[in-house]
Image (cartoon, rainbow, N blue to C red; front, side, top):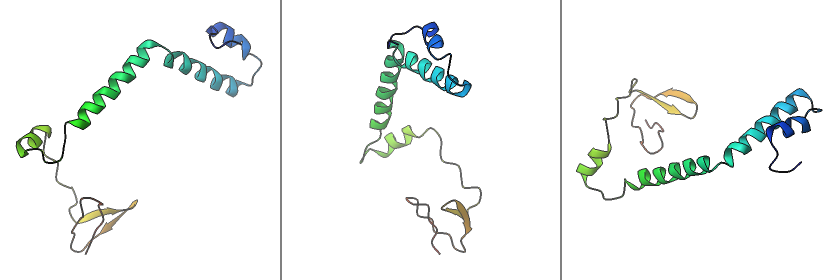
Length: 107
């Protein structure tokens, strides 16, 4: 079977496979058809460029007024100020001093 096979040819090619394998192969074939389109390539390029622009907007030493302009709304207060996350579990800290970089509790 060639790499440029039509969907009908592909369906005939995989007709003898078990149902789950046939479903998997069809999904892979359709994903390949999608990924090989110029529209998909242009969309991915646009997403990468947009991501680069957004990440480049923030920089070290930027003025406070610019930083405030980048933030659309202030962060919401924590619903439980005396609770912090330690790994997947929540722990109660008697005197919470949270390190914003690691979100670990210190007493």
